[in-house]
Amino acid sequence: PDGSYLCRLAEVEEDSTRNGDEMWKLRFAVEDGPHAGRYIFDNMPFTAAAMKRVKLICSRLGLDTGGEIDLTPDLIKGRTCVLTVHTEEYTDDQGQAKRRNVVPFAGYDYATVLESPDQDDEDDLPF
Image: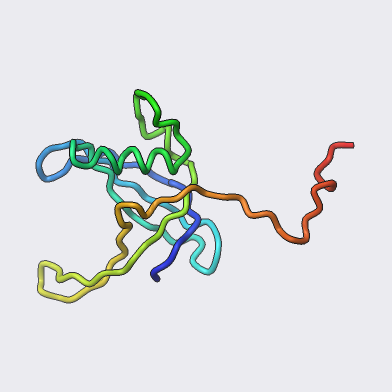
């Protein structure tokens, strides 16, 4: 359903767009809540028009995007972020109305670790 989910990037598949541009297919695993274990899919095309979004995604996954980097799937795989998804209706090739999840342009946010209110910081001390 529509909402925001803490996700881990489980898989990156290298592919290409219909125009022949390099693209990565991203498969995120929902990490907690009632939808834990489900997957959210998104694409990361490497075109001039999409570079702002590529930079946003990498930044929200915890990479330093202040300079040049040789981006590989291994640099982002396993990292976490919060994904916001919306559902939209579309018509498939057979004319059937269907629904799918869509991650909007700015649908990526930093993952935050929330501390349990019952947790006592002193319990984690080694002495």
